[in-house]
Image (cartoon, rainbow, N blue to C red):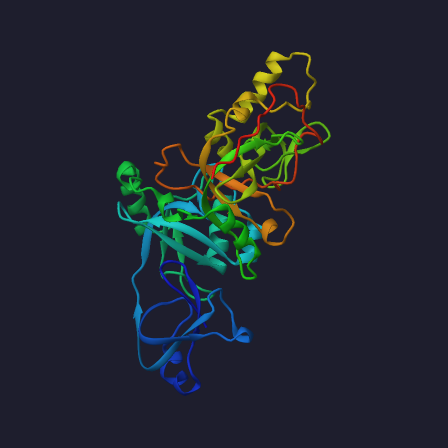
Length: 388
């Protein structure tokens, strides 16, 4: 069986044949239990069904007790993305993973991870599509409902959610006092750690904090791309308008977003980072759209679609030592690219409460949005000497 704890960790569970009649007949998929007295053992590869290579096994004195409490709270993050009206769920990814990760806060208490599986995950997707805005309140009749059992309700569905929604609307400041992003804070790693992790056979998509010095800004490709103004996915050109494949809209308003390659180093290693979306603004203090607009205003003769050269705001970051939130993506693990994606850049003083590691942009770091090359006019970039 698969066991899932309150932190969302999935592990292989095993009941020996001699004890099946004692325990299995009392267990209902989707229900929540407390298990006392068990032992762990190494999982054989042929039977491995979860990421950890250990198995929780029932012993002769294991005690299984059912927990029947419902779980209710307000939604803070969905698949580690901030809950906004522009939030678009990737239904293909959810169908493949068969689950949605939600960070839920009960009243003004702590933020906890809650996994919705199978039908519960599908129900949430349907609610997102049918409502004009994402639901705020969620009620789950059993934590981590898996395949069978366990119902999910939202906002105005039942009396309990309606009462909670009323409280939430009257106490929004207290309800959001805890920073939901704290629970997604990434592990600290050096560039060498990141490169080593990518080579591990069992490595998964993961996020890390890495402190490095910016050595250069790449100018052999565009430093930005044109995105859907809603979901920030790379826009595609239609016959007369811009379109968005993710939103399914055939006419959108496009905006420039960062897609900037930089080379960085720490005490021991060099790497190539790709700064995406809002991370670029956190790095430079400037919006990509504003920099692009300023260029066209200064050069009125520039044709639409002309590749804007690297702006001074990006050149000025060379030599800075910053802390980056890095996403090791599927492209890295499959060897398709060695460039590491930056999803957030922390302030100089490192005082950020947490890292919004869900701010993914649906565009490959290897893609460029506006042509094959970038102008090299402007200030030349002096290489920084690496300090040990």
